[in-house]
Image (tube, rainbow, N blue to C red; front, side, top):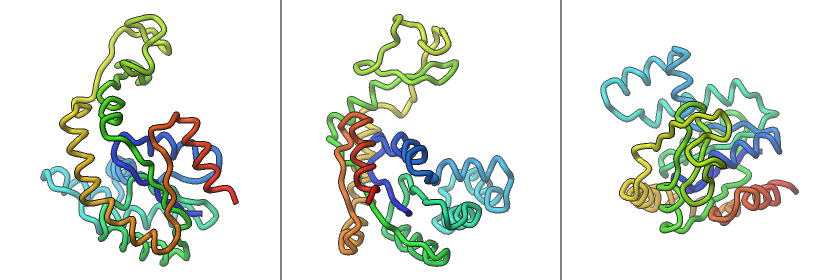
Length: 215
């Protein structure tokens, strides 16, 4: 079973992809993670990508396609793929269809995690992590049990991502609506689109996804 998880940054795609890996034995394919892994490993496509990134340019769709092709080859046909945040454009959607067909695979589900923009801004701008172990917290939803002290490792140092601010979040939402949302009608015509409330609790979203993927 191969699926796409769609939704703007902060919708919870990565969290749910990890849970689907555990529950359904699938494999998360995040283009960002694959790219970093290829660069670190020094693979041919990783070397090519590093040269482009070192110039400050964006990695092309063709290179991303090479990464996905290589990952699917390594995975084998018995393992389902979760495409996390990819494809982002209509051109990438077409490329993904071609890659899957090459491997004798097809998309079974395209699931959009729907969000409320104002609530998403609150969710993202309130995030912070332990600077030592990376444990995640939130101003409103998850404060350390002992104020100023990490529950996991006891560190008193915390950090926030510089791009976790309202302007950046709303800009990302705009890009998602402009570039990614237009790919949905094509998938809807195939009858494979489902939508889940991405603002529900993590457990509720997981339950909804399990219900979609379990015959």
